[in-house]
Length: 360
Image 1: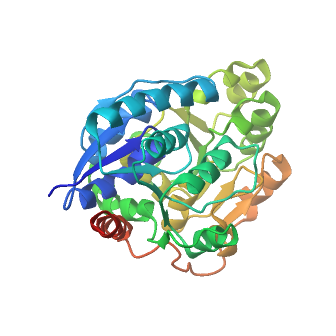
Image 2 (image 1 turned 90 degrees about the horizontal axis):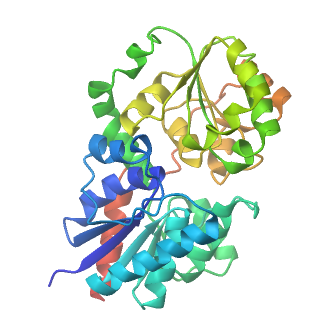
């Protein structure tokens, strides 16, 4: 008998995680991919499927952007319709986006077992929509696939131990698999004339940093003091705030700031791998920096990936310009990295665990 897994994805980080998981799942199951369309810009969606050879989505709901309630509600309705039609044996959701909670809710209400990849993460900042999504998803999912021991321990403190499994991190799987391919196929470092240069890599996309011009301006003022070139792949969310006159003035004066369009995973790996330091508010980029041994300056007041901070490879600055400038000039790791994220077999571990629970 062939069992069917319905995988719900919709945003850039989920595409990256899906790549190794799809390979592992399809050894044992039929997989249906439902793309909510949460990220729809080509540079935030299509390019990932092309670069990483992710199987084409069986369904694309084309939900697009919107207020959280509206977007999640439309996703819930669209996913439910597909699940009723396809009748999968299991639903798999990733991370902490609106696609995650919508997929989990749709499945649970139809009494279909749900597995949550990247379960157990907590920032303890309930103003982040992602924090609410991950807490709610962990509460209703049947199986919790945890990337780290810390994630398992947090679930234990919340009374969730029976169905929590330490699997390792699927993003580490993806990094190990695609780094050699990116070295062969990507020429972005050369095309930006960065070969042989020391440079910083900057990414900003969190609403807490992009929706408030003053916060965004604080970050840019600090980055403008960098003695090195700064490469800034601009997230679509930043376009409006960058129209602010003060921000435009800073950008016009920061000649060493290279603003580029969003890039695919292979190009991003090369930009990260050749950077001197990385500044970001992205959880995924924090981990990728750690995987590649790069100092990371996190433009938030907290992180889910506490291991990277404890290891001395990540420093939390928020949008405080003084802290950012100091970290740009002085922050470097002092110790060798420990291995927190598994051995590159997380996707296979998850597939095997699903196999056990479905057959039993």
